Image (cartoon, rainbow, N blue to C red; front, top):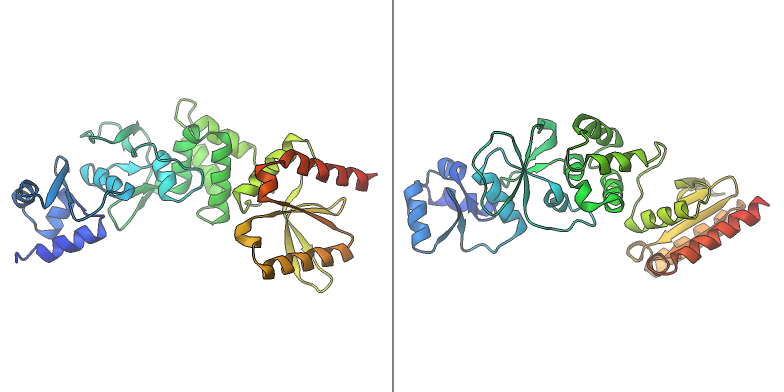
Length: 307
């Protein structure tokens, strides 16, 4: 066995079965040998100088690694970057990469976006050879493709999972904004629509509820409203209107399905009643179905308490 064989096997194992110029150089595998392996079926030529081991199945990460191997200044971004960060509502529509102006070569089969500004703070170097745009940069680039609602939802997820802070998002928008840059206008609208006091919403369901609250012009609620129960236990209601002591909980089956969880929720509601609060609940079926009616009921409760 050649002295570089183990190094090649390890490289392929950690790079989704992809090897390019950098991998060949670091492993010591001669380029002519890589071409010979492609001729005898062990490798597949994906792009000039980039090979794939046929032992590896196709995947999104593999195509991203191949693009980065082909052009060592390429950065995975737009909807592809959003998908690799596992943000919700992201749909894959090809592999999108950012490349600075003047960089060559083109990348066959990859959607290339040329940009005059790719700062080092925007790039995350992964150990698998993928250069990935940071969460706020990927979302900025993808905002026009995703649309306002999906971008807003993804932003809340980024903040809730602490992938970055709201200050970092604002700084990213301020640094990159140009009216002709893809994503700029949508991302600016999303950030501008988010009150500074608003904490990150925990789920896409909560965002849909908030949008309906805004559509029906209810008083602005306090997301993750802090309430201290009589025994001193602090709880956070998904939405709260402290002036009228009305709370709203959004029951996602992922968090409220079991008997123990339901018992905990009922106890919280009962203890909140001792403080004069009325806690209403909407479930996924309400959110995906008669949400307008459910929020209308909340509005009526607030009206009655206000009077």
